[in-house]
Length: 196
Image (cartoon, one colour):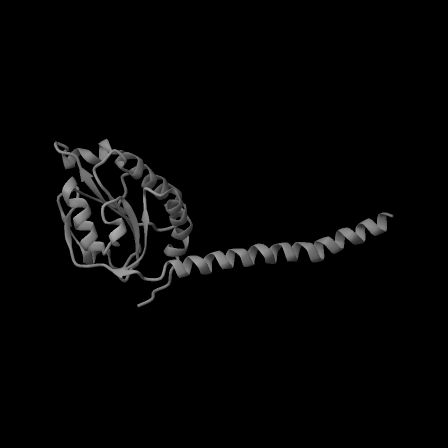
């Protein structure tokens, strides 16, 4: 009886574990292939300039050569919530990946740029650049600079911009499913090879 049990156990280990491992590896491979298909280039970065919080001028060419997560966040009641999503993405990713974030944030009337990073509890990092603009300029500027699709032009979005200036995907911050998709896509996006 003991010998039969040992044979069954060995058979499970020799046959069952490889089948189990193959199943999960193939599932992961398929997830990566699906993400790669979703991350095919959608548009190209246009030329623009913007001022950063330290009053320096930032040119669109400065985004070339690195992969960027770009967030466009207007001045509305969801601003703090959407910035919190960005903070979580940054904190979850910064240890595993070299992550670069560029945020364009809308200002309410009377808000001063010099106080905003502290008010909005933005992390201090050389890889997180911040540009603040008047509320009525955020969406038109971003739609033009990043070729944001018509259905997303007047809402908070995150986009993935590769090192060649190609926009790989857009995600609405108002849609929880799209945020989850973004989180799944970030590791694949950050590991993309050059595709000129």
